[in-house]
Length: 406
Image (tube, rainbow, N blue to C red; front, side, top):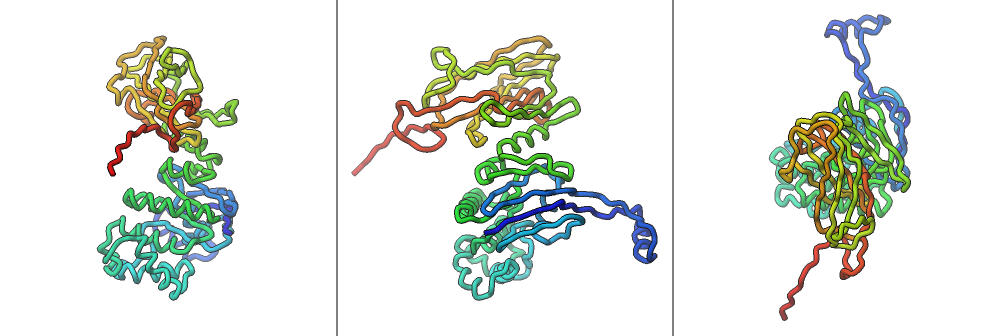
């Protein structure tokens, strides 16, 4: 079983005013330092227990890839330490370790030896590597003629040909085609069931929330938040839109879930009601029932444009459906302070049984990144039950008809 322990890890680079300062520091023994330290990461500490899956998220430049390089030993930390147990397989930069003039097969042998496999072992695994990579005759062509997706296929196939105790994956999987991404994540889930410890960097919210037990948010060179994937991803989305006059707040609801809200407060949602087809408020709904989502908004400052959006999420925070009045061609223009507005969205609730939440967003355009008046996760909770439909599984109610010809 594999585990990872990161203790007070930090990475800094030396910065010099000019090249002569660098030269003087090298050639003059005992001279005072002529550089400044630029810290990329500082005081990073966390642990992964055997079999645990943890996702690392953060904006570009937050230090995610640098952290993985230090954990895997391809870059030395300035401070702190990393302790890992078990056999480790890492998939970092695309094609890392591949020689462009060697064939895919030759590179597979070299890459396999780098992760601790013997030549005979790689030979025995080669049919499996070829089958999973599925690049055909290109396996015997130089890697320089490969597309980025083909390099990704081969690199992942080699790294996971034999189940590792610890699997570390950077965002390289994002370059693969949709079919290979599905196949790759299926293999990762299979490894998880068998006890592999997983550390993954990704911007893919669905991947983080469906695979990981925990998430870590890096921001400005440090750990900004750790917790459940839903809680951390909600917080991450909120700080992306954080501006000078915006704030981010998290509170724990009566159900024990963490609600994230952010925004300038220039407009706010005052009430959310889910109604049945007769207009009665409901919190438990039958699969496929016709419902209305009524949302009341108070405008606190003059706004040139107002857009309301809502998102339905399942209990894991995975997005089921979302839209807004911009996409529906129904934005409001020149809204005055003090106005109270009511929106009513009607739709059949074609969701599978389970608990769901509604996220609301008040913005000026199609996203909350331009003007974030208010973003509120877990704004409303409801339950869907199968009261009279035929038995089915899944997150959506897609009632089929069947025609059988014999």
